[in-house]
Length: 549
Figure (tube, one colour):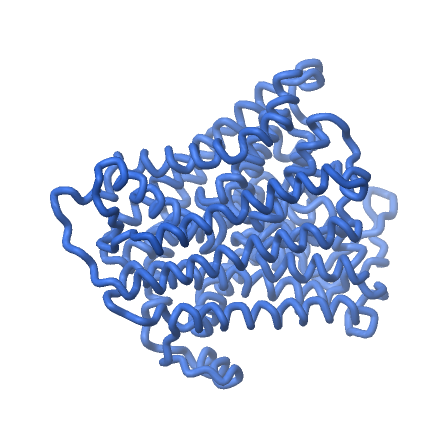
């Protein structure tokens, strides 16, 4: 049943691939604006027909993000004075900082329990809104980079405000509306029940917080993060009721990142280039899903061997296989939602969730972020191939010179530096060590996971480490903000550099970038780069734990 679960997901994504990919192409290529969009542009004071150079695009993006951080932070600090606060006090300063950074950077890491910390207005007007617009920001950056490849001798890469509004209103919002209705039909809660409402169940009473769960669930699964209303996230029956809602949430996690490869192919005028990028993503994803399932199903650890299954931390509604598939999907993307606790996985199963994020979440990755991350890896691959044959590397007719490879290299180096330096600092000071609930390799893995998740804007947690402290809230917040915006600046600079070029004609020495050979090369470069960077850290954590058990 676990393999049928995976196969049905592949079929459903294949069916949606062409229509959604083509729809997103039309959204970002259309010269027409809807009446609602024109109204939004007037409010923003934006000329929809005025395009921006990469630096202006970046400034608009950063300005929007800074204002968003201040708005989300302020709403949390003033929560007790707002409508629908449910009587909750203001959020503490360090948690408010961490949360504001987290949701604006598309990470949605939670150092708190949503049901007992945030009122409905903060959940909806601050956090849920960022679920939309932070995802739309990632899509906008990806489209800007694709325009860089597609345009010839151009100074501009698009208009950030137009891309942001169109992505939110024409793509994310319609899918969220339909998806929320599906989840409500599946048993998820969609109401304004307060935290002190008492519901009688099976002759007893329980405190149940309702809240706008279904809408928040579907928009978080659209590739944003697992910022759950309940502390147990998608393991809670109000957020993930049955096996088929579990399937539907994984489908939503993978939907947009995969279909964006079709959009990429349409925009550069070569569908086969989109298929090649999709093939790279699919190869890595399938191997990861299979290995995660194998490591969990075989239960290669003392307790699982004793009881016959690795069920600790997993819900009986989903079982081992479907939980492992969810874990792989959520860490291969930047979603971070969990329906089981990764801290309870077998050592090698937990290692796979770590490794997925260390890949840079490119298979298929986050909404937008997965596509531009994979295109960066494609640029690095053609550069390496060019060195091997002694030719100037080209990708989609654009030369990859010194400026382009420097930008691509800096993009790749940001998150490993943040992960490894952050982990080292945490392991070297008392504030970092005091939060560990486990010792030895597993305790190290918990810290490594936290900084890997924050720096890659994933948002899931290994568990077993108390991160709701001033030190971790500040440290992880810095990793989230630097891990989000530094790579984006490098991507936009690369887009501007590529857009200015005039494509060079193909020759006998041009590397075909649509064939299986290139697909294999990109997969190889991705794995080798990550292995060389993170193998020592993995050897100290999950590998040491797995080999010792």
